[in-house]
Amino acid sequence: MQHQQPHITNNPDFKPNEPSINVNISSTGNFVEVEWDVFDCLSFKEEKGRWSTLHPGKLVPT
Image 1 (cartoon, rainbow, N blue to C red):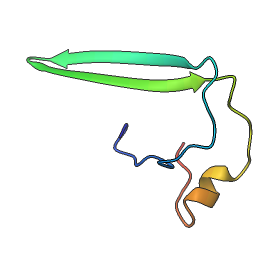
Image 2 (image 1 turned 135 degrees about the horizontal axis):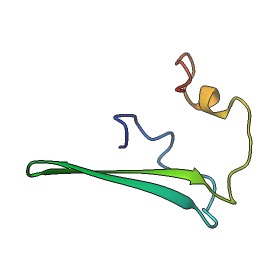
Image 3 (image 1 turned 30 degrees about the horizontal axis):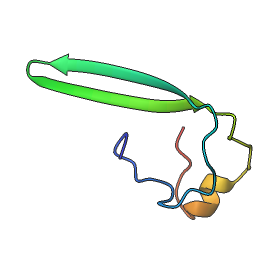
């Protein structure tokens, strides 16, 4: 789980093709945190309303 948000689905309906990932590593004392985000992928396609369909009644994260 990243950003303390649940995954949209446990069964994604696509296979990633050439994903671009941004990785941030930060440390405080003995604590190391790794955060990664997929910011682009050739498999991504626009599906307006997809997040809302999978999370009815919830606000869309920005």
